[in-house]
Amino acid sequence: MARLRVAVVGVGHLGKEHARILAGLPDVELAGVVDVNGEQAQAVARQCGTTAYTAYWPLLNLVDAAVIAVPTIYHHAIASDFLCRGIPLLVEKPLAASLVEADALLALARRYGVLLQVGHIERFNPAFEELRRRPLQPKFIDGQRVGPFTGRSTDIGAVLDLMIHDLDLLLTLVQAPVLTVDAVGVSLLGGHEDVVQARLTFGNGCVANLTASRVSPRPTRRMSVWAPEGYAGIDFARRRLTLVQPTEPLRRQALPARGLGRDELFGRHLQTLELDCNHGDQLTRELQHFVECVRTKATPRVSGEDGRNAIALASRILERIRTHRWDGREGPTGPVQLPAPLGPLFMPEEPRQAA
Ligand SMILES: NC(=O)c1ccc[n+]([C@@H]2O[C@H](COP(=O)([O-])OP(=O)(O)OC[C@H]3O[C@@H](n4cnc5c(N)ncnc54)[C@H](O)[C@@H]3O)[C@@H](O)[C@H]2O)c1
Picture: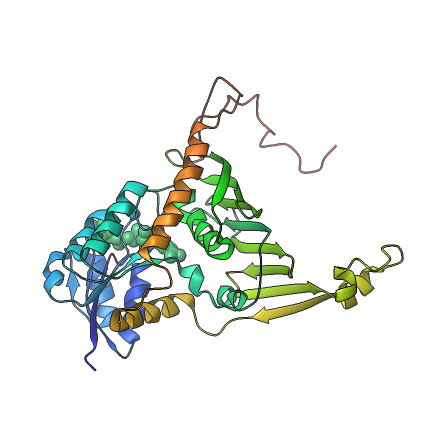
């Protein structure tokens, strides 16, 4: 079987990992890496034993597939050129910078009959895969995706950068239309929102609260799901899944609440299973799946439609954030404007001991 010739366009923080993994897949030939930063392209090409390019057009006639990992605002223009030539793509998340651009990419993929996969990598997180093997009807979901400022992805805000992962996971888990969207967001660094909280209600009664921040000192990527079957907690960073299910008497509320000790409740009637799901990393699994889908012409697990639907929901959240009035009817609106502060919360020299 001939090796699949794949290129990676944009080999910065994430693209260089795509290139490293692809170079190590037995049935793939990393045909080249592209970056407008020539030194970066050279460095990654050297490490991966391939050719460096500073423009992607020479590769359009040389590859069977490509990964697009440039900043989001360039996804649409670059992905369009590949799709028009019938080259299957894995486009990093978010699929595009706007719903209009996402729809345009989908239309091109359909018109030219080309495979389009989107890099919603958490779908390949072994802890999420493990959860998907279990029967679960989510009714309340809480998602937290926060971390320190990285200086990257400043072309978009926290919704398209971070929350988009959880929006895609919600749409996968809940499988019902989103009826209402409420959200607030604040910009700390100017331009886009850096901290966001959103509450979504679904047509099947499920409610979800999501928090995303790129200015939090400590990183957390977690999701909690409450369902009639029990509770599921995923720690995406540690690839750990916690499952809790009530015993039959507890489910029937047949236990006397009085006298039910903590140990008896947690030790006996709430059965817990902690699963370490550290068999393989999600980026390798995502790329193997992409290669497999290109070869077999199967529909990818995260299709262009999925990427588009996550952006459609993100757009509703962004609209709520943009129109939020901090003082009620009149006054500052949206993530960038805020009411004037009343004064400092504390003086820098204030003693650390409270009065
Ligand atoms: N799936 C995930 O978990 C995840 C994580 C991080 C980033 N991303 C996505 O990956 C993409 C890249 O993010 P990053 O953090 O690697 O950014 P980055 O800034 O580290 O890397 C982007 C690279 O693209 C290059 N580039 C810019 N314009 C180009 C062009 N026209 N042609 C070729 N190269 C060009 C830059 O020089 C840079 O090296 C973004 O869409 C981001 O949202 C996804």
